[in-house]
Amino acid sequence: MELANELEMQRDAPGSCEAEAHALLALASLKGVGYWTLFKLKRDGISARSILERSDGAEVARTLMQHGAKIGASGTDWAGASKRAVERANRLIDETEKKGIRIIFPDSPTYPKSLLTLDDPPAWLFVRGEASVLSAPSLTAVGTRKPSSDGEWLSRFVGMNLADWKVPTVSGLANGMDQDVHDFSIRMGVPTIAVLGTGIQTEYPKGSDRLADMIVREGGAIVTEYLPNDSYSGENFVRRNRLQAALGRVLIPIEWSPKSGTAHTINYAAALGRPIAGLRVTDWPDDRVMLPQKSHSNSRVFTIPREQSRFFEFVQKALAEPLRTREIQPDLI
Image (spheres, rainbow, N blue to C red):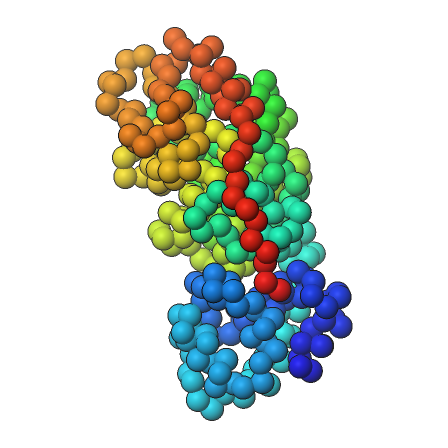
């Protein structure tokens, strides 16, 4: 118990979420322990602190390996290894706190309840910026990294409406339309939320740090469930898209292809019952913009500019609808 007592003395009162955050980062610093191991531990009701408090290194190794960790099971100096892990976590916490990054858990008042509509809500979130904006009624707008000229026009059209909807936006910081959504949000004076498919300290795409800094400076937030220095992967981005769909009260896919990341976000939104407002220009063929059959009964495709008034009213109505969430499960700390 000496290690746990040291952790508590260094970082707030016993039983605090902050102590669990430090324990989480301590375990994450162990070679062979990554996001999925920690997520599976949380899913099974095993807190990071409870792992650090154990004295039997072989037992710790077995538990971690049962949850996907790639570590050795024998000869473990757990007392020394865990102490060094806590020291590494303390250094990382000091580093992230200077950048305004913090960790929130599902039982935190700033954890967005909209994520509890997911079958597998994040067991934690790393947040930089204004955490309260995550819980405001917002709209998600996403699209292709390589828009056509028509897509760029639709992106500007959506962006110009943001000043009148007056709600935060959600997108993914990717090149192309996602960055356009963030840029227009800032221009129109509304907060914007960037949901990452990487760790919060990983710059992806390259050159996006300037926009991320501006998002935070203008009252928005950067958010991710991945560990601070996690790199990108196709799986991470697909999984990230469920958070984009869940955070918004309505989804506006601006331009996309059937096998794109935006298509994944559309499918997540359909499964969650979020209204979807697809967009097309007048001379696009009908089959260019197809929504999933399981979409919200109120979802539809709007031809712009012919149906611009109906589109605007559709989004306003969707933003005003109450959000149905599941019962909050207490977080083990």
